[in-house]
Image (cartoon, rainbow, N blue to C red):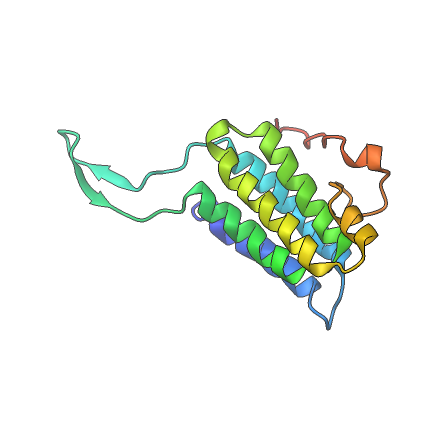
Length: 164
């Protein structure tokens, strides 16, 4: 995982989407996976990403290797969960809470992609919930997914020890 952060995201996303499958139907497990994804995105979003350019002694680029961008990691972390969990209020609320936190805590250069994901979640909710009250509830950010009061839903998480 240290050599390929995308691998860690892939494992967690797979856990989440399997939990969201009709055969299992366990949004709480998906929310738990989103919590771990949130921490990974938070940490990765604060780091400079390797540009994939190898230079010679004179500083000229001699080889370029495609490496994942912030947008690639964010898309990997969110897209499938948003699609498979589009009818779960719990998943929508947890994804929104994650993205709102990232929007507040990450450097400005990372924020446009986060805003785009927030827009995609809002549109998915509009298309997935026929009842207006369900749409309103699904749009409320909630770090627990569901069950927290609306005031508690907006409180920022306390990072685990050793993380800022």
